[in-house]
Length: 333
Ligand code: MRU
Image 1: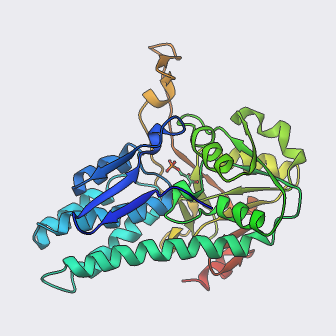
Image 2: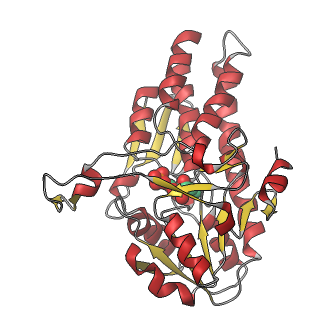
């Protein structure tokens, strides 16, 4: 079904090949990364993006460093990769795993390759199970609103929120997706429309400010997550909270689809989650043109936090978590 690979590690040359997501939908271009520094920049500049895929990519970034470096240099590479983006906890979760593996041997390269491959394999399997668990929520002829890109492009598997949609389609259900464009970087317009149409899903791209107009027709809203606190508060792409408020007003359920690697059990609530602030230029410029008065100030938080009261359920690889979140999430620790 998915006919592209977001990431591929080449063990013969110790190289990482990634699909450059900044070039989509115009061009399907693959980049070869050879150092942890290159991987860090690819994550920071969002050539690879999406919480689970950032984790898998960073794990292979450690592998690239490990071939020629000593323990201390590999640890420095880990720190660098960890700093690439702050909100998606999958990044530090993957680096923590790689660092634990690193401590197990003085000659850790083979172990690190195996661990990165395990992280990738587990991500694929989690996506598949999230798809199976979430598809039961979707009826035939459902209209579903999505935000940003929580699809195959955001993982090494079939995706989380979009994985649910692909699985429901495979079960024979007819689905129509309304994809919010997701300013400023347009992951919904550029990426979600690309992968959904490639997979034969009926898709309308709408501007973010059209969400309230179309919401009353939706069966549900499906989004991904970058970090979920212990009380069920969800950090996801900026605009998710607005969608959740609109969905709540129209009594449309909003479900979050995310693997357990996206839960941060150390954070009691969403207000502790670090929110990435990105450069002014992403808002100031549109399609190479400056669209904001040069002296006007800009805000550009990349994520927001949706309070758990607005979340109808969290679809994970181990089942759907419902309220009360604090008690139910604790069972997954
Ligand atoms: O800034 P991005 O494009 O990395 O943000 C991605 C999202 O917000 C996704 O919804 C989230 O990472 C989940 S991906 C399965």
